[in-house]
Length: 322
Ligand SMILES: *Cc1c(COP(=O)(O)O)cnc(C)c1O
Image 1 (tube, helix red, strand yellow):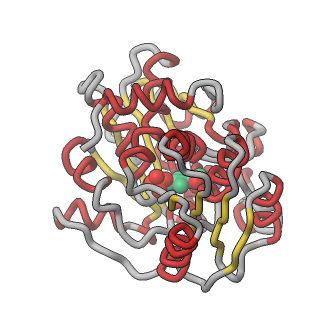
Image 2: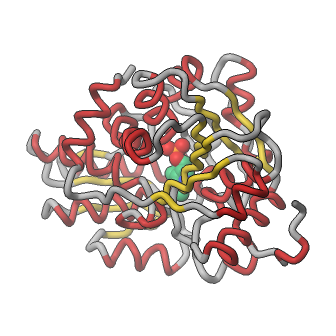
């Protein structure tokens, strides 16, 4: 398992390439939630999500060991992050994307000089193809979450929170494959175990929730949640044990609650965050937390929203169910 030292080493390695993102607050949001809410704003991070942290930690290490080509399989933020950082280090990157990828995502990868290859519709098709290209090109495949360097890199979000929010009580983290939360858990629990870390999943993408309940990795069928960064079918082999060891609690939010949180943050706080990130705000807004009056950080994991899709995420905030 990774340790606090690995996260601290990651922080040194990514220094200067990634931003220390701001903490945003809203009095109205804190009032609604009955807790003091702080938004750790990774939607304002380079490439629009925290994924650049893990990608930088991993790619930099690979480059130091002589790599001169990287690949990734991703339809979203991980692909953009790998393309950006490969270009930063001056090496080519091929990102394998689904056939039905939106033009805006392809354009984002191309803007960072990444090469795009379309392959199949599922990650089960994309992953082997990305690994195959890596072997052909004598390059390195960069996994999205189940890798010690990726996990340690994502954990640097936790170290920043410790410095930015004095006496934080609780941190709420969205869970896809579990790279972000396993890094944050390591950073937090090995620094101050009194701080609670709570995970969030969409109710219709509850693979980690079920896995924790069953005490073993449990897969779900494909899901259509609007939180597209959280559509993984099961937690990772490396991330799951960290969650088993350290996670305090995991809560579920409905698609309607995600939409309401998305709309609130956009209208009242003027921030464009992705549905995957709105899950943490939804958990705080809709009484999923069994306490009041605490200092709560919600991790806003990214802000890459396809504008074509946005109308599907918006509800009338006059009718907010709060
Ligand atoms: C990847 C991603 C997540 C989930 O992170 P994992 O490390 O897979 O758990 C959450 N939100 C956004 C915006 C992401 O891009």
